[in-house]
Image (cartoon, rainbow, N blue to C red):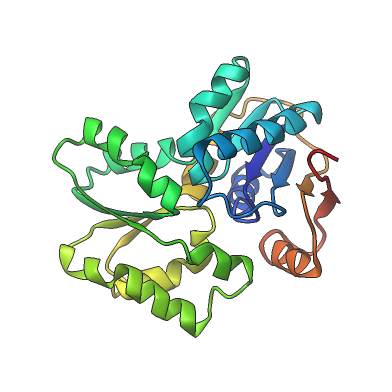
Length: 256
């Protein structure tokens, strides 16, 4: 069974892409909707939250785990691997770095939460692989709250996106790395700022390809289960918009 976790519902974009490529893969998802967002929290807190969730997923039978959150990928991958040495972890940063390296991108913009941008989790490995790459970065802390409220098409969000990104239009950016798994839900707005002239690197799609390559199980069928640490009618509507009409949803409040 494949475990997937995120700070909220953004990681559902990863779950959706994985199911497209490996439809028989059984998944168990945990979204920490009670404590979202994580992007403005300390590394210690994010590690604590991530370890709690991994412990829960392992107790439910997860054999591999996707860290479907850029913030957690940047700050907890090594931490979790040390504590669970036999577990296979996928993060959402490594496959994007590999794609940019393969395509020999020379000018890239990374957008994400404050924690992801501050960690330089993309810059360090990319500069090792492509020493001449020109990299720009921008924290976009208001994106996630709008998306979590289902307002990804809102006029105000469009204005905020321009405010964050318009200064990069003249930088001849080749690609924009969506450094948060929420951001694919507003990729069209992001492309519009650049007049449609940039490549969008979508971590959800890239990690799904990596999972597919590593999927050698013969018995994959079974119910997918989506756990959340808090729930509301709004959450339900949002989840169904991404996953479909009949997701198997359960609530588990960590620490209860």
